Length: 204
Image 1 (spheres, helix red, strand yellow):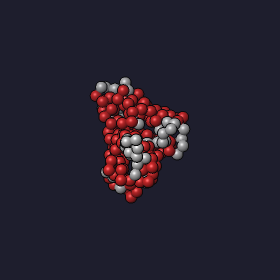
Image 2 (cartoon, rainbow, N blue to C red; image 1 turned 90 degrees about the vertical axis):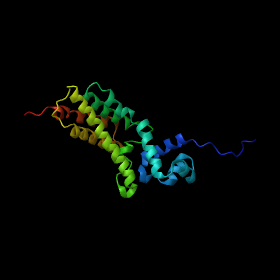
Image 3 (cartoon, rainbow, N blue to C red; image 1 turned 90 degrees about the horizontal axis):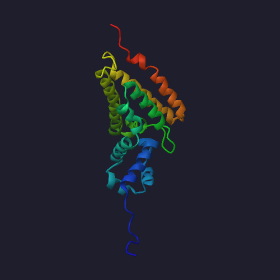
Image 4 (cartoon, rainbow, N blue to C red; image 1 turned 180 degrees about the vertical axis):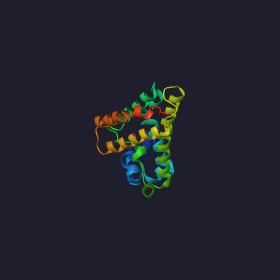
């Protein structure tokens, strides 16, 4: 009897996960405060007390997304025995990750917010910074391949990394538009067909 009427314990982790999925599905601007509180099972004062603001909540959701949803995509960059295997694994992992049943299609980092007028410069900047980090991570993998003698030192690692990240970002949009996993895998294979040309030493 003593517990009757006592409020349910607030599960911050589950609430954050629900917010992440909503932002992933609707984007920052599309996820209204009422949408968020309904998905998280809390009221507005509780949201602000726990997370500070919608922007701060989004940043936490973005960090959770990186930890919980991106492993299938980025693990091959670390574990691939060769740079080619790493990039192919990155793109194939993207095709699988972006089309998982029961999950929003595409990528939160790509689709979360594109226009500062809708989401604010801070939110757009956070996503832009993450996309820049993604290019840098792939570029570093290519530079490692050069150091190990796998790739020639004359290649432009940043340009190649930008190319493959651009392909991946396009796959995100395709997935959101309803493209199948098979279609995304075909896009990945098409992009890998350019590998030899991109990584061949230029003649002097």
